[in-house]
Image (cartoon, rainbow, N blue to C red; front, side, top):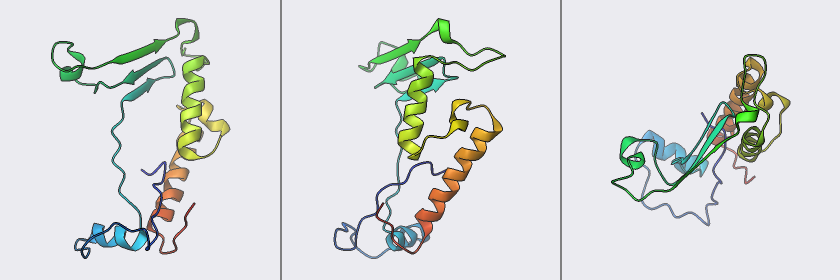
Length: 141
């Protein structure tokens, strides 16, 4: 899914070398987009807990005896998700800020990420971004 778009490069600013050979390379050459590799070091769980740091979420990084890593965990026990309501603490606000930065918009549906409205809104954003990504017309914004 494409929830955020990489910037297009212009023909003049291209650093591409050689001729595109594969179907993916041809599409990337035509659209002037870069593939995006996401190496996330942040996890927000149910707007209750946020983990941010250099550690990967795996045994090697979390062991404490192997790699040098740092991790910050935030938890607000007074603002937890319940059956009746969603969390509304600083972690919730932080997620809303992150989603607004990634998607380029504030959407009321984002307040409740488990709602069908939120899922539909995010999928619509992903589809719109995919259409921009594969479009022949270059949009520099």
